[in-house]
Length: 286
Image (cartoon, rainbow, N blue to C red; front, top):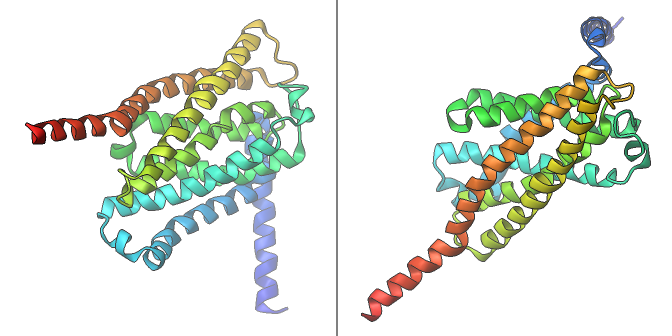
């Protein structure tokens, strides 16, 4: 037997043992998705790590002057935004594709779609990576992002376990607003914070944030909490239904906190600069 064949056989045996161990640990916790999709999640994580490390190399080749003017911290943030942008485009695209899927919408507690579940598993790598970024750079991100990331990771473990899949739609559709958020950050790091493109993108971000995060997501969070309070949770493992109700309330609270910061940023983006310009012009005329 060749060395390659031996290595493949050894990896296969190791994978089988890991399958058994992971299922023994997570299946009794009603988290069968971990045992089913842990390889998919691992590959997803490695892909996101690879993109993070490749982003500086590609940027240096494509935008050498812009990248060279960034500070070390901005260069790291740039790479984080590249990964987040690609993920938010991917995430929001498949969520929109399943927006009106009858297998999910007809039974909001127990609705199930195998293809949708697999796509959710492929997205898990990002949330694990994002949580690691929040932990490694806690001083920059803070407790709110850490809570948001941790809740998201466990939430996807539940969603890939044939439970509450419908709620991936209102809870992950907000990634559409993150597309514009990440573009905003990239424009800022590229020195385009005063450009028309920056302002148009910010307006789109604000509209998406209010309509999706503060509107659509909060609406479904409220009715999920109401159903949990009434005990109308079908065959779903009840503690997970409670968790998702708390998750919805927490996300809505965080979104309202962030909305205040966003509105403040919007004021400086659209109005403060023009007022300063008018003030400078008035002084010049005097």
